[in-house]
Image 1 (cartoon, helix red, strand yellow):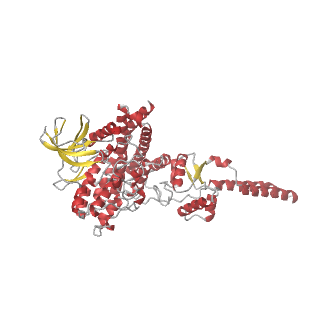
Image 2 (cartoon, one colour; image 1 turned 120 degrees about the vertical axis):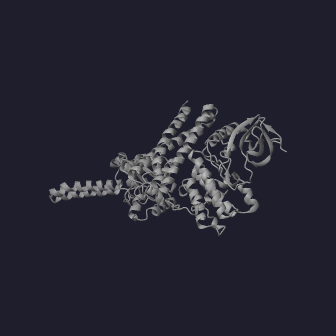
Image 3 (cartoon, helix red, strand yellow; image 1 turned 30 degrees about the vertical axis):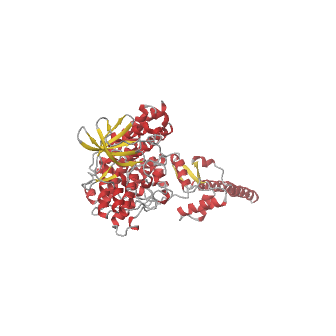
Length: 597
């Protein structure tokens, strides 16, 4: 046997006697062992990360295990300790005498729908408890779901995916977990959150129902269909409610999945009433007007931010004919009701597409570029000094010259006096035309938010960069439409969510800076601790926003919760958001001080 593996009878720390190997992973070997001190069996996970990353990987896992030890749930395998004995590092865990889900399916075939739903509820409930503490599993898959002799599903190996030895604690571009079950956004390099784990569990349940992975798994994010994976496409007798729940959990867009593992667990109960409708994403989060560019808010509502320095966004198409045609098609597909004249003015740079607060200008240009629409911004005040189009200047000059000449020849003082006014009016109208956006939709309805909450939302959306914070805030705001919650409570919740989103964006910015200086920071004892706290704080803040979004969904779709208002969980959610943001500000400041030292 390979010398890197422990033979039976090996004694670790003069306490744990190895009884036999029960499994292997990419960077670990799991043994059944006896704890001589208490006389019970335990599982020992021997850690074998790449040598260059061994110290960092063990430190990461130690911190993760310390956090997981604080989580208690009957479907989470208990973790007792992370220890070392000479060259060996290992995790001591509860021993579960049963196969994992992958072995069970490989040996006996797919599970029936009822068993899959029960297993899914148990694992989703366990994930929900961990997520509320800001703890992600990072590698949900059948091999990490043990089937205990009492029939309960037990989730194991929290945080063990970190043994892969990424260069830093966070490493945005590094995949943590197993590719076959990883969410598309994780494959694309984004940081994981609870919705990523909902996706992984959804793929796991698809596998449990069909005995096969979806066609997309392992072949890149582009293969994930927008509507998610339907197990009914392979096994016809899967109940419709279970098929829909798995499909929503595995949607390509995180915003179209269940916002929390708890909501996924509820949807896996055939007797529960869970609203599976996806909130439309092509409308303004405040008034419901058409919003086809992914900005989240229409131009009219964006101006509620009370910004005195608005900018106009002009289309800046390339000179080549083919790209210009592509830009025209992209605009026509999103502005179907706009006249052809307006489209020509837009493409010619004579009229702006929209008007937004200055803080949103750069972000809007980036979002339009994602749709294949190159654009630029111009300050609103500057346009009064911008050259008027040449044809208008020529016309104004001709009118002035002709009118003055006619006034002299015909001895018509009135014509002589009014001609310059007509020319000035022509130039003024042209200037006003350059200030009038082509896309300025009328509100489709009235916002349910109080004025202060509207302004906070508009200001925050204008200033937040593209990323998780902005996306999460938009998803939350979309669920305020049609909400039965009173204006005061809803306003307090939105204000707290805006503050939390700002803090989350700051944490992400600091973590990205920490990634760039990872070698220097992780070589310091306080650097590793600070990055770990900052990342866990970031995950906790993301989870607070997701849980609040899930609670809004529950309140909107559950008559019993509506009847309980104003004693709704939303009041607690607003307080938790505000408190979490305050706590994580301290973690962010710690990283800032390290980066500056």
